[in-house]
Length: 195
Image 1 (cartoon, helix red, strand yellow):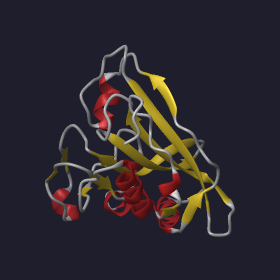
Image 2: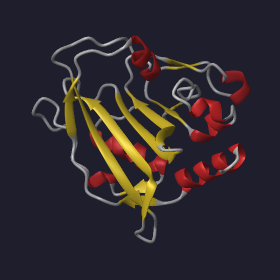
Image 3: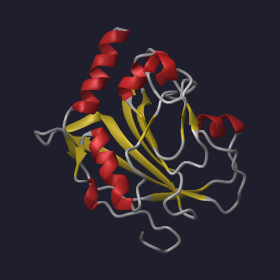
């Protein structure tokens, strides 16, 4: 078993190493009937109760620079089918002790501002309005408890600019997660429109 500091260093290396897409994925859509208050809070949004809301998701398996699959890493991109270019989330996840752990997250056009609890300690703005990234290094400073679901990566930094298209979104994911080839991905099918 890797000690806490060894685990955190390994995770940092996984984010920083160059990666590309291993298998060509497709978007999967599922209806959401209701969401618990706990899940909504963890996602940083108001509770959703709808019989018509659909969330679409793309899971990416990645490979290293030698074209070898990195089976303990995946990238998840989620969007609402009825809300083009709003509340899109990309997560960098690692497999740890038989469960997937989110170690970095980018929130594009979120519905509410993000409040940084540890803003002074981590030299971050107290509140971030608009698209932002929960950088691995900003959260690892606090310790590995922030990577548990209840921790929810509390520290975030604003993106340099607001994405204006799905291509802008994937460029930010490529840059922050050090993964190439995302510009070839098809965008979600937002109500029959490709944005």
